Length: 439
Image 1 (cartoon, rainbow, N blue to C red):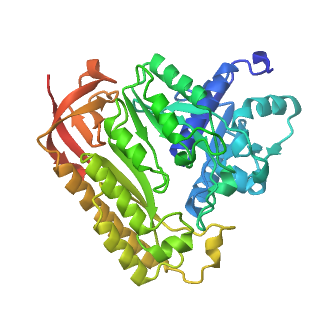
Image 2: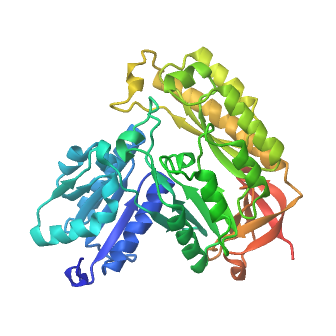
Image 3: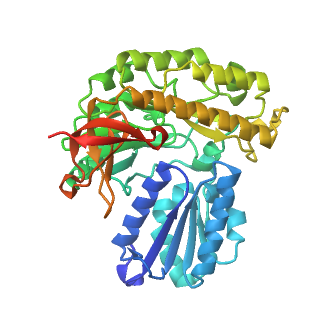
């Protein structure tokens, strides 16, 4: 038990890099600090504590983390700087060596930061607390509200897949999940707080319940019964874990939106084997076709890695042709980055950086065309839109049930409200649509 008086009226600044999961966890950390009497800094205030929640998905991510850490140390030399997250788990010694960092805490230590801060306030001795990956067992629950109206509910952490290009298993440990009862209670709290939409997030959410008798399908059925939540969205789910049963159930669900995000990573079977992915292109195509035939209006986002080791020009062209043939809505394109300790480094064939850039541009162009084609289908139709809190002097925006971003004239009385909107005109190269609220 930590005495609130230890902290007095201290303030903290929180900086998050990386995925939605990190943002959900930072929100929980900030609330725990607030419960101990440490409030978020307001504009112009100098923080007593700085918490940097890091990412390490690419070398660029590592670089951004180092830059952020050094920037805060320089700007707030008197603050207690705490670094946590995936980069802290993987490169704890590197971070601890940065002058000015006081606490380094690994991925599973995030919910103990107030305890570590209390101990540092007493001893003034810098600490590094990192659990070896094989010993990670705890699931740390978190739920966050972003700048928008939606909340992010963490249901699962860690990954057992060990894809050859990925460091996540080394950064977050083995797959583990919260209990359905606890997660339903968190969703009920979101509803009590006035939240209308929840994004279900995790590292490998389709693996929910591994080692237990329940599974991801059981979870979403339970969440669908929570009164007050009008919308759920399923974040990235592996194609081999996206069952026909889940797709069919979403089609008839009261609250789950027609929106899927499925990682492909490559449209070449040979590259998928090199990556140690758990499916082939035939399975992936079957899942896309199942979604499209069962839920014709569904938005389908697809993750793709470009320029991976082993991706020869011929295999890249195979990948491009495969993706071009899919009826999907958008690509999320990532340029391959070498990660120390990954098995991919044993693959001999490498792609020149300039060629990686060229291939990335090709896939981004394809994504833009896919999005434009998808959006055009709905011009002139009327769809439900959850409007987000407006900013002074600017139009309101929100997303349709099938994840088309819509802009409408501001009306503050409609904040956080689902309204019928007619989709009139595509703007911003297909990124948004101008809409008209229908009474």
